[in-house]
Length: 287
Image (cartoon, one colour):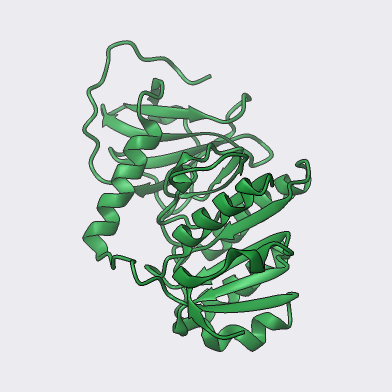
């Protein structure tokens, strides 16, 4: 197959594959490609499961999550997809805690196995490709999710072809999109803040006493801007939160619930920008 730009691909070549994983560096057009392929499949009447493993520039959910959601109609953006399930990793790069990232991936895979079968599964990944650990994580993702097809976008990953080809049915190579805008660190941080604001917009506020929380993870400070995950005794993510006020002995945060249950511990994640929301006096306790 001749190597062409991902912009010029004929999507008919993907029809025979049930599961597809996309690998490539940052700013190569991976997410746009997955969105376009999702809409192509939906137009053909397929139910599509989109899996988002990009914890830094998340589309399904906020930064720090691995998640998936089902699509049965055309979408304008991947962020239009409502999460069916997510697991809180907490950091915006797998480099921070590779073992914690792998744990979240395994929880996601286990949950997927219990879902009803979908026609197509599309898997988006992080843009971290430099070094042995990054490469090993990509191979591990392939082994965990077992895609039939892996799409490599960008010459930086073309040399992975022979390694990846041993693990899957087929590998396609494409040059990056011509329309991608390269984003510097400041632009990425602004994007993360915008995604987080959108995700927690109008979510319930709760007031929590810091000394009642058993915190785990790299960070222990419950300061403004931190994202946090609430877990049950099975390490399932019950809810996630974004701290909008630090009151000393207490914090006020927006909460997004996934499941009901008793909170066994809290994992403190990265700080996402500076919160700007107005705190209402009508806040609740998380129970």
